[in-house]
Length: 208
Length: 272
Image 1 (cartoon, each protein chain N blue to C red):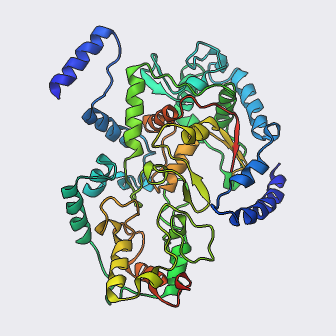
Image 2: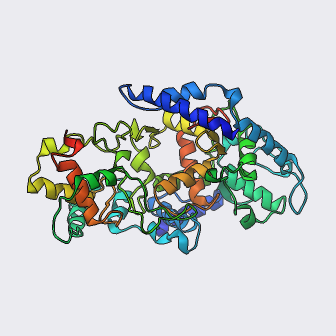
Image 3: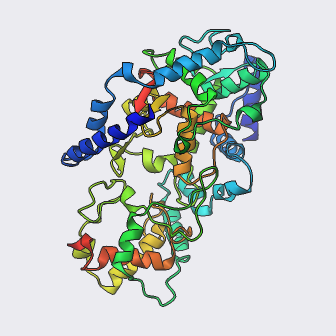
């Protein structure tokens, strides 16, 4: 590494051009440097958001396709972080879940007016997923969830899987594109349970 | 001008209803219908204002921006945007249009950089007119209308910026765990009904996006530049406000522009 660096510097000097980074480590060093200087400073910017945990570091480095052993380590680590609702009731109220599924409010920072503390956040799930067939403006980054409960039933197993998947998407798929809604504190365990009900409850429009 | 927006919205909701019936829902047909007439692009008024600002003697040194070098020599504006971002020897940096404007306005005209960056973008929620920076940027960019997207790639620092930009494109962070690639890494993806370009590969998606920017955004009733686009995307990812013209945004723009190479600039653009 050091030798390559010296050699590149020497070559650059010979050629009379500015030295530029070209190996992975040097590029990564610039990535870190640019992130440190690339955002406005100050308390209201919440710059701690820019800090990657070990999982996101690995997913970034491997562009979401880590080797098998690393995938396993990620999924085990993420599963261990899951928190369950106080009463351990992983299926809440589907009508409340419908609201959480639809609402895109939350987590804004900086010059855009920050969140009002008393306004509940949403999962903005329609941005990526279809669900209630009446909602046509659904994105397709995630799979369609229409008929989710009809297909999977509402057994305890399905309820637990669904809760864990929403709370921490990387439990079942390392480097999933889906945000870790519970783990990152975007949604509360109770809100996640309400989303589970919206997907699983036979009375929910998702399963009509 | 602002009054035009309301009937526009009514028409757009009607058109969207028609689009909903299509097999793959998206808003392209509505846009084609609404934004077809280039001569009716309100950005043309902002281009004119930008030209005046560009040519006017301004700043503590009372000189015009015609004394600046945007890559093809002092005073040249025709075709400069088509070759940006590029490496500039005087700053020893790769710069996009807007970071280069700041260099020019501080070193040549004597403006204070922090003062200039205090108000970079018009706030559409307050119905503000475009800022001087936005107007100057769209004026310069529009002088590359019809030209090939041809960023300078020969200098090692230009190659470096593209590589750093690519790594940043895949860098996941923030409360939603997103990277640029979360939404712009695969073909034919949508957020709700909004089509998303796949910028992980070179070709038509990147060419269309880069080639049409700066653009008049109908939903903002204002012209928007690439620096604003990056700032807005980072905001969607729930990250802090990007610093105007900093190497982070320039590297991302360098990567995206390289992916768009050989496309054509149609400027100023008009979009949602």
